[in-house]
Image 1: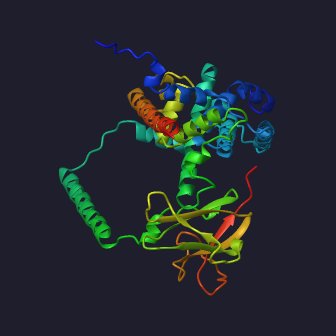
Image 2: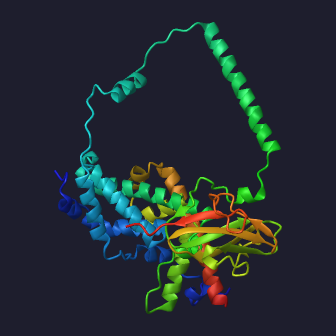
Image 3: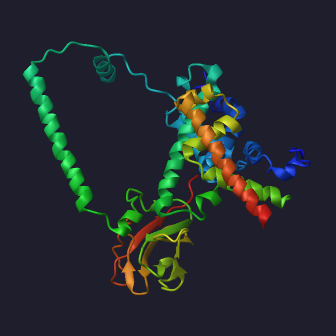
Amino acid sequence: MLAGDIDAFGRLVAPYRDRAARFAMRMLGNREDAEEALQDALVRAYRSLRQCQDHSRFDTWLFTILINRCRTTGSRTRRRHRTFVEAESPEALLAEPSRDGDDEAAGWRDEIARALARLEPAHREAFVLKHVDDLSYEQISAMTGVRVSALKMRVKRACDQLRTALGEAYCAKHDA
Amino acid sequence: MPSMTPEHPDEMSPPDLLGRAIRSCREPVTITPDFDDRLMARLRSERAAGRDRLPQLPRSATIYRAWDWLANTRSIRVRPLTVIAGGAIVAAILIVVGSDIRGLRRDSPLPAVATATAAAAVPATVPGTTVRFVLVAPSAKRVYLLGDFNHWDSGATPLTRTAGGGNTWATTVHLDAGRHVYAFVVDGTRWVTDPTAPRSLDDDFGLPSAVLTVVGGST
């Protein structure tokens, strides 16, 4: 139905774009990589729209493509960092530019971004899908192909690591 | 017995940092203003190239016939002696290969520099304009980066040991798009080229240098 109709495709994906952009940003940590992964995912979705048999699960199908593109882009970025790493450390790259206004809030956003960057990619992925996108474990399992039990372990580890990292940052700030 | 309940709970326990992290991650992100225009342009080129129409393979296609053959059960008749002989050959191959691998690990340790930049498969063509140079030099006291971008000044761009005082030295440099030739100088006297990067054919100082090509940003 939508084959070749670009405007219709644009209307189809519009409700998911911001959520998809947020996921890509949390996974990859910098706007350039996130937008590249998101564009790639949308182009692939456009190419293979006929394969989406169940239109009621379009968001699941789209996010499955996006998850894979983020994995590919993230993997490529990590390989590049082994020899030629971009301007800052990966942790610093994950910090979005501080917004005007509350410096403390901006500082915490940076700490959170750094803590998120230190997670194993698989743990970060599970954490973001579960706690940021608020998906059920069954939905995440369908998107990622990972068993529910493994996903629960990954989310738990991510939460534990984030608590530890942010706890240390909190103590450092308040002991200073 | 004194009450165990704190009068001011917030003073006794840190705030819900994980909850704060989740709320922060849920905040919307900003997309560059031309994102939609770039996407539409890519989709138009997809349509122009006909890549929005999937090819429909006939059921008689080779790939379907191959899959049917592999996926269906079938009976195979073999002599027991054939099975025993085949197993012995496979076992012999595994023993030989295993010995070779163990021999390689014992007899050929990788040099320190090569292990550091072991991602030799990464091409020395990277997007972006800021590049981080990394060198493993466990015994070095000083490492400098020289290249056409700093006029081959041996004192202009020092590398620093990475966190933890390990064997790795690193620095970041802003590079314009284009071809760049560079090398490292260790302790002021030892010229070291990047083992993972392509070799420059025009050695500016009669010494080997590496080549890095920085391309413009993708559109």
